Image (cartoon, rainbow, N blue to C red; front, side, top):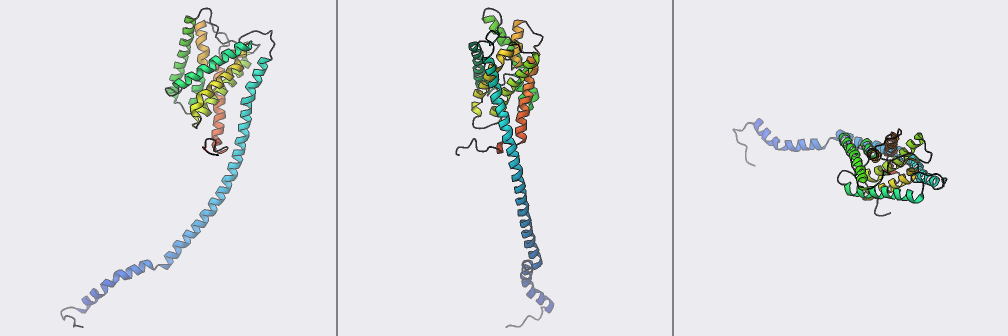
Length: 307
């Protein structure tokens, strides 16, 4: 080994010799931290174990909650579904078995069926045409329901209501101008129906229509494109139920237009506004109840491609 230069001081030499080993010492110091490593892994395991137990407990509680909620949803679904099925069926049976000596709008089966088909098929076609334009509400009661559900903004909904009423007036005026004779399509109570009964018949008939709109058109699923068929059938059923007793308004625009064309407002004309709007509230309440209960989890997979 050669001798070290004499002009290099020992302190400087020692620093130059040790300096290259400092990074290794620092590296080892960073790696060898037993306390911090133990703390890290202990916290990780503890956190993981605690988190797992928490999730397990939460899943158990959530599963119990979902089971009870879905059980309630299933019961309410069958309850309201049975009402929606049997109420119109019972009323139609009541009409079919009425006293044949009683006359009035829809008292004859052929007349009742013809009127019901006329309104049901007409709204089916109109909704199919204008569904992509304005939503195809065609009824202030339906628009109110969609406003309550948040599907239609308030200002837009009010404009649509005015347009619907004007459209009903123009349609009634066109019929009066094109067909001879008196206006025979105005709403009127019949079959011995009182005003209070008329209100609730109009309300329940409209509720079926608006509930159909909410669950088939507002709620998006694979059958949404078929919504006009369901809406048309709902209105047809509503007319089979209400024509004999109230003339089947179910739509303030439908009732107001003929009254203008006929220049006759019976003193109970208000039932054709109160009833349908009450039906809007009923349908929105039923829909909102099932939305709060997250009805989608009660009977999942209905839109699945496979079983």
